[in-house]
Amino acid sequence: MAKISGGGRKPGKRGKTRAKFKKKTKKPSVNDIMQEFNDDDKVQVVIDSSYHAGLPDKGFHGLTGKVVGKRGKSFEVKLKKGNKEMMVVTTAVHLKKLV
Image 1 (cartoon, one colour):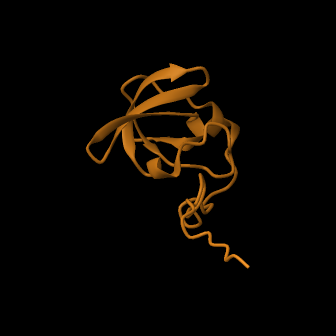
Image 2 (cartoon, rainbow, N blue to C red):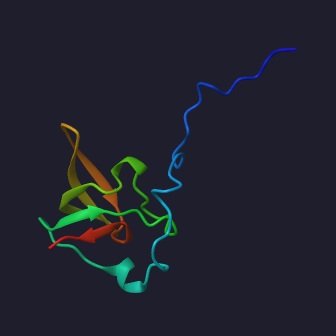
């Protein structure tokens, strides 16, 4: 009988996010969903796990960047991850405006 091993598997899109995606607040309000950002606004990616539309990758949670444009109902955010500059397209629920 062959031994089945799952040792080399990746955790998946939402794997290892139990603490990161834990809900700290209530459900998103209509104001959270419909908030607007202007170009060059400084925002932080704060993933709301209860709202699945436009959910960015788990690796971008907590990073800060600038809004560079709009794509439909979503916003394009340019940020740095390590030494690389990256673009994230996400909905307004997953963004928090910084002053």
